[in-house]
Length: 164
Ligand code: ADP
View 1 (cartoon, rainbow, N blue to C red):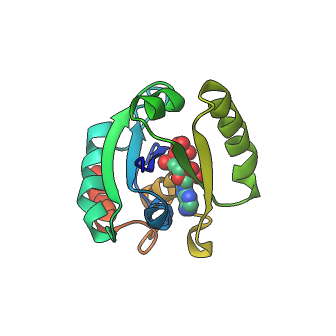
View 2: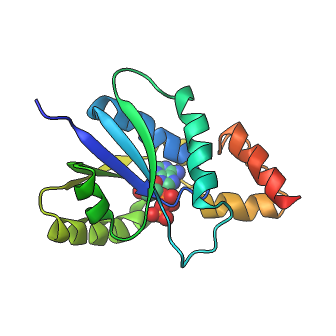
């Protein structure tokens, strides 16, 4: 049987408990999941791609469970190209609310057109993280608000270091 390999692409600037929730839900569905950190020069990130990958690599062992392998990698350019190069058959995306749906639908249909053999798989976020986004976490934290319980402890510590 061929390997069921998926990519979970995103900016992950930084990784939140919402991302972790989606990864946990993907574990029983695939043999290997590549957490694919997008190197997007247009965005002004808080963490470099290398820092984001290193953070994710440190946190993933906490959620590793069962047979599924978790791999962290970075990419630039088209998600569909990266997925094809890595021989993935699925792209995992999280849906938080109806507001995510329109954008995600457009991306999924475009990716299907670019690479018809790859399916986008949508997973619903846990309700308690449905309002959590990396951007909101950065905004709140930068203004002195608490993000405890919404991002991994290590992420919170690294955000604190960035603000110093
Ligand atoms: P992008 O910059 O591509 O939106 P993100 O790093 O913000 O990348 O998110 C990557 C994926 O994780 C997206 O599919 C997004 O919908 C999903 N995601 C982000 N936050 C959450 C959350 N709190 N719950 C569920 N899914 C989430």
